[in-house]
Length: 311
Length: 298
Image (cartoon, rainbow over all chains, first blue to last red; front, top):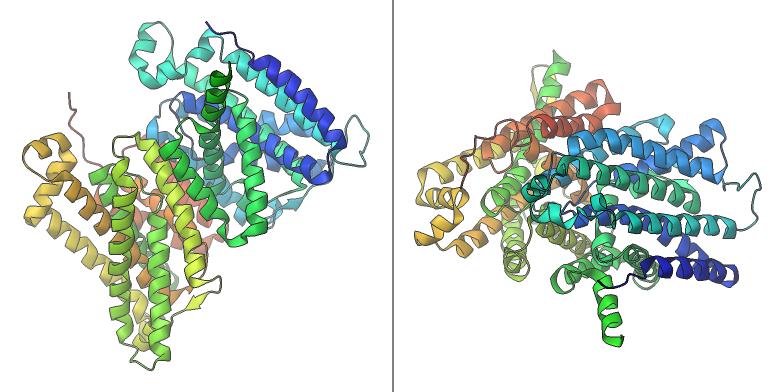
C-alpha cells in the first residue's frame, strides 16, 4: 500500500499558511479566512459524497451555526471565539443527530430533497421572524480570543486555520478507521456491507452527524469572519447548492481538496465580481457543468495526476 | 364569509400557476427520472419573454388583446428553444450517469440561465399589466376579483384536462406510459426512446414557460424570480407524488390553499407551512401522498 503523507502535508502546509498570514496583505488573509471557514462544511459533504449521498440542504446546519453565533452575541453578549464556535457546532451537531434518525433511511434524490425541505423550513422561519432579524439579518461584533479583543483580524485567522488543520487531521484519521472506510462500499453495495456485519444505517447516521457538526462550525466561523449573518447568504437553498458546487469542484479524493476547492471558489468569486459583476452565476454554473462533464474527480484529480507523473 | 372566499380564490389562483409549472416538472421526472432544477429558469424565461413583448406591442399601439397570443407564443418559443437546446446539448449526454449528478447539472444550468436573463433583459423590472387591465374585474359574493386571475384557474384546468387526455386517450399517452413503466421493454417494442425524451423535455419546458408567461401580467417581473418558484414546485411535486399529474394537481391545491390561509391569517408562517408540509410528507410517505403503488421489478 502507498504511504499516505496527507497528515504531514496538512500540518506543515497549515503552519506555513499561518506564518504566511502574518505578512500577507489584509485582503489575502480575508480570502483565506472565508475559504477555510467554508471548507469545513465541504469536509463533511465530502464524507457524505464518498458514501454516495448529496445533500441539497446543508445550508440548514451552516445557517444554524451562523445564527447561533448571532444569538449568542446579541442576546447573551458572548464574544469569546471558542464559545461561539462550540455553540454553533454543537447546536448544529445536535440537530444533525436528531434529523439523522430520519435521514439515514433516505438515499438519492429523496435524501437531497428532504434536506432541502428542512433547510427551507428554517429559512421560512427566519425570513418571517422580526426578532431573528428577518431578511436583514444581524451584524456581529468581532470575537475576543482568551478575553483579549484583537486589533486586527489576524488572530481570528490563526484560530480558523488551526480549527481547519485539526478538523482535516481528524477526518483524515476517521477515514482510515474501519467505520470510516465504509464510504464507497456503502455507495456501491449496501447489502454486502450489511452481510459483512456492519449497520449501514448507523454508519450513515454517524457521517451525517459529523457533516452537520462541521457545517455548523463552518457557519459559526463564517459569521465571525464576515461580521454579519443574513438568511439569503446563509440558509437559502442556493447556499446549499453552492456548498455542493464546491464539493464537486474540490473532488472527493483527499481531505486537502476541500481547502483548495474553497480557495479557488473565493478567488473565482472575487475576480468575477470585479471583472463582470453580472456574470457571477454564469461563471459558477459554467464551471459546474465543465467539472461534471470533463473532470468528475474535481480539482484534486488534477493534483494527484500531477503528483503521480513527477514521482 | 368574505374572508373565506378571498382565501379560497387566492389559494386556487396560486395553486393554478403552481400546478402549471409543477405539471411540467413532474412529467419530466416521471418519464426521464430527472429532477429538473432549471425548470425555474423556464418559468423565469417565460415570464420575461411575455412581459417584454406585451410591453413592446403595447408601445407599438397594437391592441392589448394580442397579449394573450403573446403569452401562449412565449411559452411555446421558450419551451421549444430552451428545452430542445438543453436536452440535446447537455442532458442527452448524461442519461447513463448518476441521477444525483444530473440534478447537479441542471442546477448548473439554472445558474447559467439566471445570468443570461440578466444579460438579455437587464436588471430593471418589467410590468406587463395590459392583459390584466383589459379584462377588468368582477364582484362576486361581496368581494371584487380580477377576471384575469380567475382565468388562470381555467387555464390550469385546461392544462390538467389536456394532460389527462394526452396520457389516457391517445397513442402518445400509451407510448409515454410504456416508457415510464419500463424503458428497456419500450425500446424492444420499437419505441424511439431518445425521441420521446426530447419531446417530453420540450413539453415540460413549455408548461414551465406557460406558468411564467401567464403570471407575468400580475407581478413585477424582476431578477431572481425563478429561485422561489422552483423550490415551491419541488414541494408540490413531493407532496403529491413525483411523476404523477394527479399528484401535482392535488399537491398544488394543498400547498396553494395552505399558503393563502397562512398569508391571510398568520403571515409569519407563510413559507414555513409549505416546507413543513413537504418535510412531513417526505418523512411519512416519501413517494408522495397519492403516488400509485409501484410494482417491484426484478
